[in-house]
Structures are given as structure tokens and as C-alpha cells.
Amino acid sequence: MVKFSPFDAADYLDDEETIAEYITAALEDSNPDVFLTAVRDVARARGMSQLAKDAGLGRESLYKALMPGAKPRYDTMLKLLHALGVKLSASPVHS
Image (cartoon, rainbow, N blue to C red; front, side, top):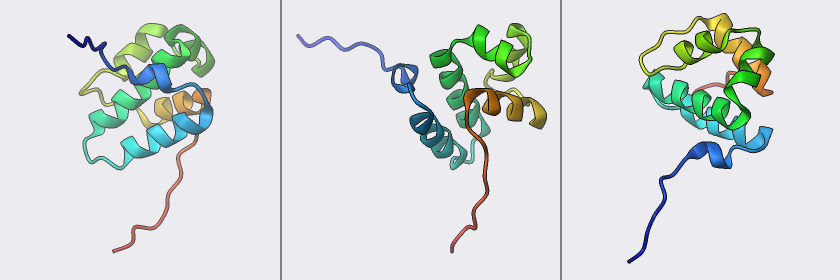
């Protein structure tokens, strides 16, 4: 019998390029929880406590901001993304 272990994206988010691609893919989904989940996965990969410190947030605030259904402030997300070493950018939508 083959045993499988649960998949955890955080196990594969080990460099800025992979992190940026993962977050970019999450931004393409219309469900905002997909983006929050992606940022949470990256935060777990990097260490929640360290990320909170790097972003200038309390650890509890970080957990609350990344909960499914949360509505974090724009400036909070920018701080988190900057602390993770990625930035948001816009590109034209082609029809």
C-alpha cells in the first residue's frame, strides 16, 4: 500500500523567484482567500515570527491578517510583501 503525506506548499517556497511566481498565480484567482492563503504559505515557509518582525507587525496581527475571510489593509499587505522580498505590479489585460 502506498502512503502519501499531505502536500504543504510552504515546503517548496525556498527562494524569491518561486515565492513571486506563487503569489502572482494566486493574484490571478478572483477569490481573495487564495491570495491570503498564498501569502500565509510563504509566511510559514519563512517563519511567522520573523516575518512579523521584518514587517513591523505583531505576530498575532499577522495571523489575523492572513486568516481566510480576513480583509487586511492595503498597507499591511505591502509591508508583508516587502518583508518577503516581493512587490506587486500591474500589467494590461489582453482580451
